[in-house]
Image (cartoon, rainbow, N blue to C red; front, side):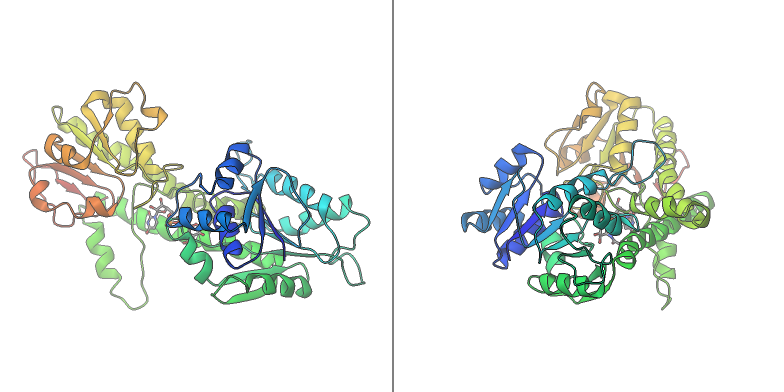
Length: 428
Ligand code: SAJ
């Protein structure tokens, strides 16, 4: 089939490339001309392991082409963002989905399959169906007619982990939610072309909720770890040691505390559940609060430590939203480092091996970007904000004698004494 992928971002582009690799001709649609031009040159505008070679290959073979103009296709895959609305209440903004659905509606023909992949509040796929049905009264839509519908509509969320997207796009199991069972079967036949994991069919609303539940589950569990880290800090306990020991229980598996929760999914999607059922979601809402609050706890802790060492040169290790990636958007590490830079200016150096320059908010703070070796040489106080592998392997000999605040627990061997009498390695 001819495939059209709408939205060429972190999910859309890898998905388009993998579908093209399976042999289907793919048109990738994006609103940004520079993105379209980049891809048509066989290059990419985002960072993801092995994506550059894959895109180059499928573009060269003529299987992937990008455009700002939609064209008829047999299968449409919508992978556009669903951010928060700008109302300040964490409600979902599905206007990009609506815009994409309207465009697709304009070129739909009998036999087509429309699949929504964007993380969406429950009911979005049905609303998309209604929108398209309104625009195309000449076509029969699933669930609205007793006769065989002309088009099939399904919701099929992705669940890939940044940094492992290509691997996980192929190997993860997937939920395939049809507006009707027939729609699910049509979508299933399509995913079978390039997914090796098990594809499980269900209804569209269950599939929508499943995606939100997966990320809310992780957020709640990280919140538990972050709350423990604050309690342990108050009790003078090493939270990493406590979690390590507790996880030896056969039915306990506590996640890792950190400086807060970042990225574009875990800190966002739980709110989509809250927005649909505000009265019934105290736990999910509280978990969000705990994870956001952890960032402020880290800033306060770091500030105390810096004030206690007025002559120390400060090194903040990491800006990325998690380990071993170069994505600095929605990053608690970046937020914490920027606060410290703004307050302590030219006493502060930032180490981020994945950055070529500091983000804008560091401009005029006096803080600089230096490499790890320089930081280990010049800084007396290290604040670990990201658990990059390159940080983990720094031997004790290169950090001994330094004051360390390790928010990720990467250096369990850091000694615990300080001339000022406060713990050198603080637990949370
Ligand atoms: N984090 C912790 N402690 C942990 C695990 C993570 O503090 O034990 C933090 C990370 O440092 C990061 C944030 O949570 O700041 C999110 O990182 P992540 O690795 O948990 O997740 P993402 O945002 O990279 O990807 C998630 C994944 N969802 C789940 O694992 C349930 C991925 O499978 C989804 O496809 C993705 O969200 C998405 O697009 O929805």
